[in-house]
Image (tube, rainbow, N blue to C red; front, side, top):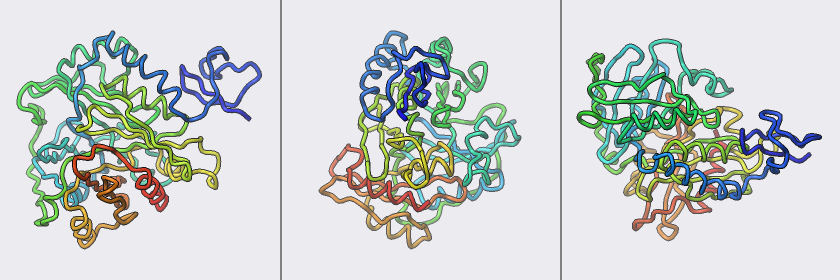
Length: 390
């Protein structure tokens, strides 16, 4: 039976007698047959760009400032130690407020990492974590990507008038910064945050904060200097939500859809959104066709069945990747795949096994000779196939 998709609510449904969308009752003349291609995106992107300009959103949001990773309270120290051991991030400070225990990790030239744990049971992301292989860590996921804005008051006013919903009724304001974040997306499970600094950038300490006397020691490993900034993060979304997830992200930020790479043997699409070629990139990975059965599904759809929609991996730019890869293995890290790619292709990449503390996979990626491409088809095919081992 033919599948249809509603361009208003993005509901995918079986072809009915009158063709109306069962969710919002949109007229059948506006509903189109569902198939993942770039056709719908190419039609919608000019509308999004035009609307951003009309509303005054163009140029209002900049690059990624930090990510927020929530863990279980008991796993917080282990998660911090893991990042210190296998990335170039350094521990800066730890503090407590009424809602969280937070550790700040930084590296020059990279988005910061806030690794935190909730102090109470109120978790707006909980519904996205209750899956077969994630329910044992109900509070654990990369929750929020936070972008800088030069006028948070204007941004909040515009987006609220558009119907965008936020976790708080108003902007959180203090001497250091003003901050707001959306509710978790129904398409990705991610929240998008926005910050305007008032004093020194990267100063997360407020009057409410209590500095914790926590000490985390960075291991003395020579290879750690080769692991640089956060390059990209990849969120796995359902096939039928692929277009909606990308459009939603474009409407909330100043990022643009760059390209999509179709990996038909694994029923997978890698979709890339960018601000500029040199900035952090946001990746959305989906199936080409929706999940039908375990036998026919590819690794992406199987992952979602096991873990839900969430960030699958975070990628760090890596120099001297062959020696670094060997050193990380020797230091105890296990991998889903050996290094793939070559100087001729422009990239070398690899995936670690998922962390027991964060459920995240680390990718280490090296770009040759200023190569700003994102994937090669052979690399992506091999990496997508490797994730089936999860």
